[in-house]
Image (cartoon, rainbow, N blue to C red; front, side, top):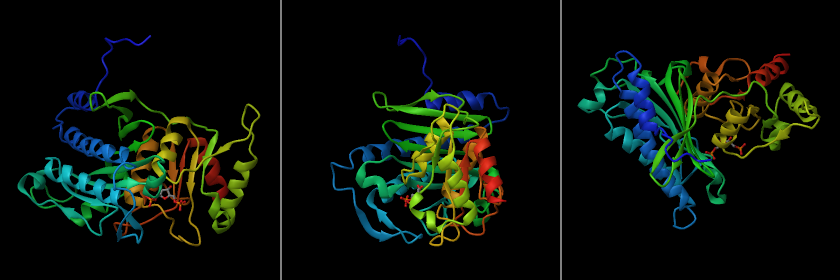
Length: 337
Ligand code: AHG
């Protein structure tokens, strides 16, 4: 029975509780996460009324990736940039929607330890049809001298250097999930109090799963060893005798949230159309690789651990194979055979 006296921790309470246990912690990361959660709540409000107001549809421009920009993408990007600029914990940002880094360059921001890279609204081609979409972010400790404006090198770090990473899924409920090296925790938005509340403590990705996630429409464009592995998945028998299930929403956040909770594998291999892969290393793959590894899963480009890739430029792309530990191991066995 529901216990009305049960103390449910909010995201703020949880992060404060965490930093209190770390000697010499300044609370900067907690503040940063609170700022991102504020942006997420604002984005959530707009996503929820997307069908009611004239906000769906194209904004009429293309982003740096050459993809059409939806109005909600623009709104979400502005919210993320706004909270991080006005907060006290971020020296600068880089967004999938922007050509270059944004250096905040004011006295308070220059003193900050962190820079943030994000995809403000992933899966935005799904907006018009009400499929779950999300925000993804990775937090890096800057390597340039604090007190001065941050620099490009602060952003071009490998994913291993993330101090935290997370995502928000705007789905049947809205969830904020974030990881530090200490663990992965999920918070569900309670609309009655407007707070993210701890609902999924210490998330662990099961070592095996029953679901694989890949865009089968590109099958003919995949390399032979990828096709071979997909064939294996198609013909695999679960322990209880049935076949595996195949699911692909077109929103990485939705597919990877499910993979994280239930186990499974998500594949986005390179294609002839996208010879470097489609998904962005810095805004999509690194944050999820970090979260998945902390949760006990794995993430690879096929030839390298995602988190060890040294980015050459801000908008690099990579193929990705990510999910349950044993399924990734099996996958890499085929890819490297
Ligand atoms: P976008 O944000 O431009 O809609 O891209 C979404 C990404 C990712 O979330 C998803 O897994 C993938 O693109 C789907 O692309 P395809 O439909 O081309 O496979």
